[in-house]
Length: 349
Ligand SMILES: *[C@@H]1O[C@H](CO)[C@@H](O)[C@H](O)[C@H]1NC(C)=O
Ligand SMILES: *[C@@H]1O[C@H](CO)[C@@H](O)[C@H](O)[C@H]1NC(C)=O
Ligand SMILES: *[C@@H]1O[C@H](CO)[C@@H](O)[C@H](O)[C@H]1NC(C)=O
Ligand SMILES: *[C@@H]1O[C@H](CO)[C@@H](O)[C@H](O)[C@H]1NC(C)=O
Ligand SMILES: *[C@@H]1O[C@H](CO)[C@@H](O)[C@H](O)[C@H]1NC(C)=O
Image 1 (cartoon, protein in one colour):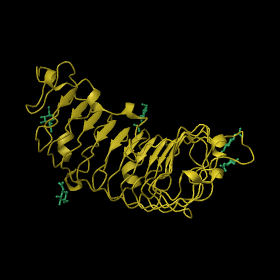
Image 2 (tube, rainbow, N blue to C red; image 1 turned 30 degrees about the horizontal axis):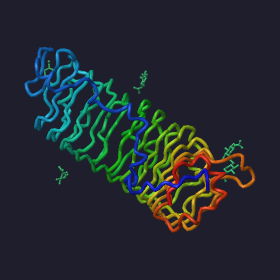
Image 3 (cartoon, rainbow, N blue to C red; image 1 turned 180 degrees about the vertical axis):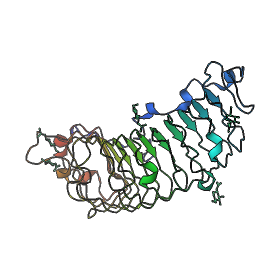
Image 4 (cartoon, rainbow, N blue to C red; image 1 turned 90 degrees about the vertical axis):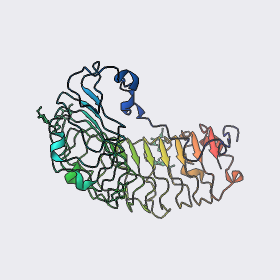
């Protein structure tokens, strides 16, 4: 037991929060773009600027119209590259409203009242350079039509999207981040197939009964928490070469639904299978570092899930193992574990 340090962190760390650091946080955050409300309002001499917005002279290609109670898209001077329209009450984006915004690179429209019916067929199509489109926290039931293929970061989480097709996403060769979590998607068909640059896919909090087909092969992060998935396809991870983080907490996974070597693939860093219906610890690769299995129905501690009995020199790299909220206790962990799980600094039962 010497190398295995049993730390009871449950009281300190809320379930699920301990591993929430997002390794791609550096990709986020328009707020870090040198925008300080005080200094913006000092001078609006950066060229044409609608009254309801601020266009800082020091950053003449940005227009800040966020949080002003707007109900419609204001006129947009064509020099603009960065447009902030979030936190308003905008209901519609007719085809005519963005005609002059052909140079936009970022368009922030999250936290508005957009519905799919009120978005023109060609509303976004003129923006050939658009890279970031934030539409999260609206009331959309579909991914808007004719989105620019230049997009790199598309956020549509917290809407009411129930269907996704390849018509909407096809040809987005540079799309790197797709946030579709907290919608009502039941099936995605092969909608994600062509997304050859996608590294982060978040489809948590939908109504999926299975893993979408044809997931892009260069994914680094796959988040499908809080759906209704009860089984995984055979060799489902074999195709991926870069996948490091898989989060599937809060689904309906059973032992039967997971083919034997599904998770015994090298490269994975973190696997979250907490809050499912597993009775056994699935076999994982010795290279895995963080395994979350809390709140399942696991009844035994199977050391063979982590290490080979034949080759004990190939010990596990596991650092975190959470087994709390299962049907085992600390006494069920055999003492040989100390050798195999010698890297583990947290084993929680
Ligand atoms: C687009 O630009 C033209 C010419 O500057 C202007 O007349 C028109 O009002 C603008 N339309 C919008 C929707 O901004
Ligand atoms: C969303 O749209 C539906 C109708 O399409 C409407 O009933 C509902 O109130 C809207 N919700 C919000 C938050 O605007
Ligand atoms: C993707 O990015 C590359 C390099 O920035 C660019 O040349 C290409 O046109 C982009 N693809 C699309 C579909 O916009
Ligand atoms: C250790 O086991 C992993 C799979 O769990 C395998 O990919 C790797 O090649 C093994 N390493 C050695 C040195 O045998
Ligand atoms: C994982 O698969 C490798 C072969 O790829 C095998 O050598 C190893 O024993 C397996 N790991 C476990 C824990 O069974």
